[in-house]
Amino acid sequence: MTIQSERAIRAVVKSAVSSYASGFSDRHLSEVNDEEGTINMKIHNVFISALGSDIQYYSALARSLDSSLGNMLEKMAIAIASLQYEVSQHVEGLIYQEQTDFIAELLECYKNTKGENHKRPLVNDYIGISKKNRSSFHSKRHESDYYLKDPETGMHYLIELKIGGDLDNKKARSEKEALLEQYCILANTIKSEENIKICFATAYNRYGEGNPWKQGRVLQFFAEEELLISSKFWNLICKSNNGYDIILDEYKANAHLIIDALSQIKHAYLHE
Image (cartoon, rainbow, N blue to C red):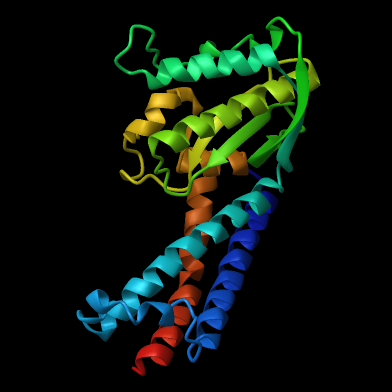
């Protein structure tokens, strides 16, 4: 990675954190006297309020912080990826009935863990799907978290990002189905599967950075090669083996802005 690229990434992170802190603070401070505000709507939960005003406040704020911080990270990742890739958030084109049928059969094999036809997911399971016999077809558009095209290598990445990575059975199946359909649409459009990769990504490793990913529902439907857990995701969108470290370093350098915002909100609600 060049010094210029690193500076650009750091600038995106700094701007994202600064804007988030300001927006989060402004939103909650403007709702202090609003009965329909995010925090005030929780004050009538008698089971929480019985634990004290501090717990009442923190329980409401924590949910808001977790959700909005996740949204900020998603937008920040798109901005960073745009520095290195052509970025889109949808795939549109033709998909054939034989491909749809094949995907349904494959997912059933993944789901049926105790059946004779059970399969553990592998990338090779769907290689060649674009060559299935073609009869009826229809046009379909899929919204995508990240569709990245590398202008240097010609690689196409279709990425589903779940900030924490937690999926139940229905979501795991539906996410893999959506990615496989996007894979087909893209392969049909560019007339090749050679440079297409589908990925399930997380912004952090809930089991600790560097530890194996153990979320069972994810592993039931996604192959090991399809996982971009934490640093692998950030390194990919930065096109650098140091991308994750740079992003985390810059985030920590600016985290005081969020801490200051939280302090202001706490003072406004708890008068401390």
